[in-house]
Length: 180
Image (cartoon, rainbow, N blue to C red; front, side, top):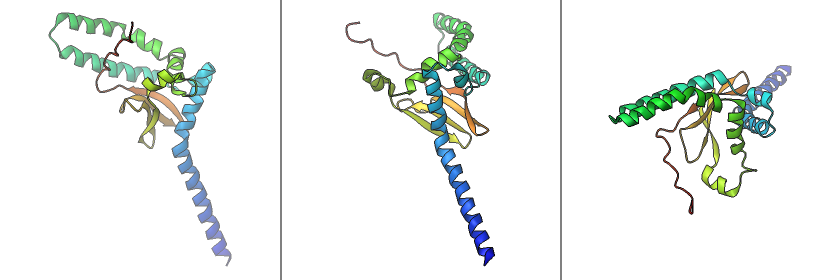
């Protein structure tokens, strides 16, 4: 009789552990993002930086932009366009260092908090969403840009921003507002 209680207790314990694991799997990315946005809004650099692997993020962005520049350079024989690509390449490290910094990422992450975003910006920005890339990674993107966004990897039981997936094509220029 006692053996049945022990087995039942182990089954209940296993179900509780599995439930906690499933809850962590589904809720931890949103929790990490909420904490990041709150740190960005509060200008809490140490907390924000604890969620970001700056070296991995810079390396990923540099690799992706280099590939994009290479593809653009191959599309044309126009020397002016090739010179433009060369100039963009020469400025790449400075732009990446400015963007992949606490201040640069703070400016981007506060836009993911929809409570403070003016209605006109909400309309243009699209709703943020979490796309699972596997058990150990996910992407924070916007509905209108599927396949692009910030990439996070699981580190222990937490998450770190480690990359940026660029859109397949560079964004089209936005039309100027009326009267501009």
